[in-house]
Length: 173
Image 1: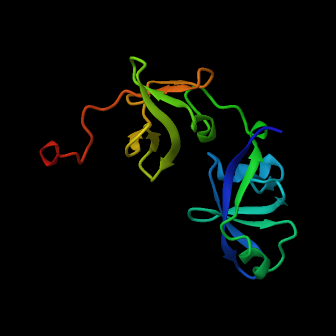
Image 2: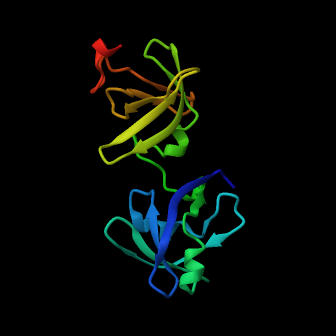
Image 3: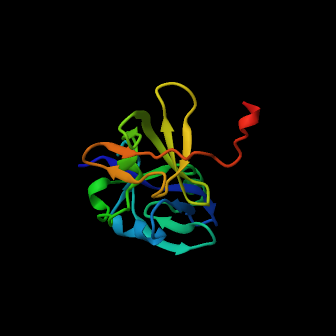
């Protein structure tokens, strides 16, 4: 079995019959039904989605064996995973966040910058977080201009650092 990938997080109970709110981290939220049983990261618990419907910014799902509000409330905050090999292949220029975490970050000339520790999306596009050997992490837009090259086989991303970042005030330094 390949390394698990987090595809969803269970939220609060919904109603009294055991349904839960589910936030998905997949391009198509309803795709979580197609990956087979969802499991905890350690693989000790599995959940089968028996019904799912879209709500405003999440899904409302019923899980096999979760029949009461009390059962559902105990699952709040639980992250759900599937083995990487159950996910569809990506298109050119598309990556699973899990494939990018841990890659070396280098400048176009090959100078090391650090490593990728996270990919975030706060609503305005993907942000790549780079941890340098020392100092604060860098949050950069994950765009073709800033990240012109991703080499999964070579284990690195090329980062073309922007000359200026919005909000920077050089006179304050």
